[in-house]
Amino acid sequence: MDSLNRYLIVDPVGGTAGDMWLAALVDLGVPWDDLVEALSALPISGYKMDYEQVTVQGINCSRVKVYLDEEPQPHRHLHHIVKIIEESTLDGKVKEQSIAVFTRLAEAEAKVHGTTIEKVHFHEVGAVDAIVDIVGTVWALHKLEIDEVYCLPLPLGSGTVRCAHGLMPVPAPATAELVKNFPVRIGVGEGELVTPTGAALCTTLGKPLEPQESTSWLIEKNGYGAGLRPSKSRPNLMRLMLAKKKSL
Image (cartoon, rainbow, N blue to C red):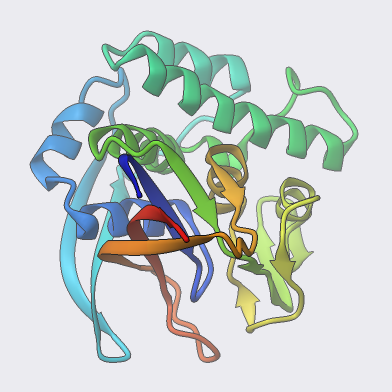
């Protein structure tokens, strides 16, 4: 048995988003106070965080909310976000992986809008809550000493979603770009189930979980993160499974 490595399996039951990642990691055992303290290392303000236990279709979950001050947040470019992360006192590996996630987001947005990553305005993705979600998720993975992340296929949802550019098809164009060459389920569920932030976290930090006949898994613990958007078609939650590999 591979007893030295710790693996995380992402089961996007009702999709994936940045707040669902954070909530599921807290549910898995990351201390809330430690997370809040770690994020205070970022040189940003204008927000507060809240954590609560909720029930989603009979399943006990954690939910994380990020509240922004009423004054509007600036539209940030990638170099602004990189500067925020680099000026923090976080661990170097946390900084590196957080920047990698935002860089993938910038590349996807640039491809969709026909511009360069330097000129991309992040709009919602560049807001403080997304910075908190992404950096908090990366920090929490390091806190749990996760060696590798594996993802089950992402349910992309259907319909339309309203964003800064107006009404967009689901998945949003940036999400569709991010999940290229990554296993997905088309037309599963109603509404936007996978956000650009959620897609960037999965495809930057994780690998597709392919069937492996020579490997079984020992699940040590499950964490459930509830989303903020109600869903009629699927439980609005994401499950994270802490696991070890066992060779047959």
